Amino acid sequence: MTTKKKANAAGRALVIGGGIAGMQASLDIADKGFRVTLVEREPTIGGHMAQLDKTFPTLDCSSCILTPKMVEVGSHPNIEVMTYSEVIDIGGKAGEFHITIKKKPRYLDVKTCTACGLCAEACVQRGRIPNEFDMGIGKRSAVYIPFPQAVPQAYIIDPNNCLMLTRGQCGKEPKCQKVCTPNAIDFTEKDETITVSSGVIVAATGYDQFDPKLKPEYGYGRYKNVLSGIEFERLCSASGPTGGKIQLNRKEPKRVVFIQCVGSRDKTVGNEYCSRVCCMYTVKQAHLVRERIPDAKITICYMDIRAFGKGYEEFYDRIQRENILFRRGNPSEIYKRGSSMVVRGEDTLLGETYEEEADLVVLATGLVPKKDAGEMSKLLGLSHTPDGFFEEARPEETIATSRAGVFLAGCCQGPKDIPDTIAQASGAASLSCAQLTKKGKTKDLRCR
Ligand SMILES: Cc1cc2nc3c(=O)[nH]c(=O)nc-3n(C[C@H](O)[C@H](O)[C@H](O)COP(=O)(O)OP(=O)(O)OC[C@H]3O[C@@H](n4cnc5c(N)ncnc54)[C@H](O)[C@@H]3O)c2cc1C
Image (cartoon, rainbow, N blue to C red; front, side, top):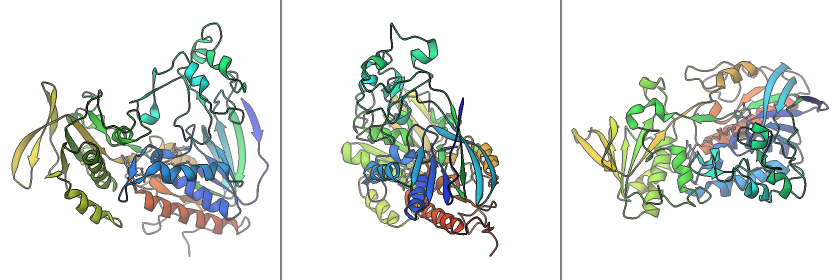
C-alpha cells in the first residue's frame, strides 16, 4: 500500500458520491473558484441517473442530460475526480477537515488508456460476467468500461473475475495486455491511501434500491419475468442489453403488470415512508411499454397515485388516456400457471378479487438508505432519522446537519426526484461556499 499526501488547498471542498447530487454540488462549488475533491466509490461517476432511460415528466433522455454534466465534471480545472475510491477517515472540524481516502487499484492507468476496447474484445472471460450496470441482464468481460459514456473514459479490470488476478495466470500471457498498444495494463497496482484537507464536506451518497426478495409473495428471483424498477429501466434503455427493445428471451411481453409501493409505505418490511418517485416512474414506464408495444395490455396496481411535482399531475393525466388499466389495491401474490404468471389481488374500488395473467411484472421498488449508511453516518459524525437516511439539522432545513461544515445533497437525506436532488445539491454548494469564504472560521449553521 502506497501513501501519497496532497498539498493543503485553502478553500477546498470534499464531495462524497458522484451521482447527479454530487456532480451538481461539485460543479456549483468549482464554478465559484473553489477546489473540489469528488470521491466516487464506483469506477465511474453518474450514479443511478446513468441507468435511467427517460425521465418523468418530460420524457427527456436521461443520459442526454447527464453525460454532458459528467464530461464537465471530469474536465473542470477545479475538480479532482477520484473514482473507485472511498473515504475511510475524517478528522478535524469545519474549515479544516483532514480526510483519508482509499483508492482501489484499477490495474489500468486511466491517463494512458485510450478506451479503444480491444482489451475487452480479447479477454477470455468476454461475455461471461453479469454487467452490474445492466443489473446483470447484460454480460461483460473481466476488463470492462461500465458504460460507453463513463467518466473517466477508461477501462478497469475486475479483480474477482480476471484470471490473471484470481489464479495468477491467463493462458500463456494475458491477451488483454498483448493487444493494449499504449501499455496501460498493470497487474501489480496496489491500494493507495491519499490524504486531503477540506473546509467543508458534502455528503451525496444516494440510495439503494429496495431488495424485492424481501417481498417473497411477488416471486422476484424465482420468476425471470418479475423485474425491479431499475432492471426495467435497463431493458428500456437504448444503451441497455436489448438496445431498448422491451423483450424477455427475445419475445415481446404482451401483458404487462406494474405493482406500486414495493418496499415503501409497508410496515411489514419496516419502511413506513413513501419513496416519492415510484408512482411517477411507473407511469413513465407504462408509457414506454405503450409506445414500444402498442397492442400490449398494461395494468398498474396502485395504493394511490402521488403526483406532487411540477407537471406531474398533467403527466399522470396524459398517461391515463393511453389505454392503461389502473387497479386500486396491491396484489397479494404472483404465481405460475403453465407458462404464464398470474397476479392475484383485490380491486378495492370494485370490491372484488381478480386474477390477471401476465408475461412481465415490473415491481416499483422503493428507495432505501445505502447498505453502509450507518457506517457512513458514523464516519461523517451525523445521526440518521428512523428510516435510516442521514438526518438534516431541522425538518425544515434539509441541507445543513448537526455537524458544522457537513452538508447533505440528494437521496442520502431521503428519497427524492432529480429536480429536487439538483435543487438540494445547489443549496449544499451555496452553503459550502458561504462556509469556505469564512476563511477557516467555523459556524454552526443550526444557530442563527
Ligand atoms: C427505477 C427508478 C426510476 C427513476 N426515474 C426517475 C425519473 O424518471 N425522474 C426523476 O426525477 N427521478 C427518477 N428516479 C430517481 C433518481 O434516480 C434519483 O432522484 C437520483 O438518482 C438521485 O441522485 P443521487 O445523486 O442523490 O443518488 P445516486 O444516483 O444514488 O448517486 C449516489 C452516488 O454516490 C456513490 N456512493 C455511494 N456511497 C459512496 C461512498 N461511501 N463513497 C463514495 N461514493 C459513494 C454511488 O456509487 C453513486 O454514484 C428514479 C429512481 C428509480 C429507482
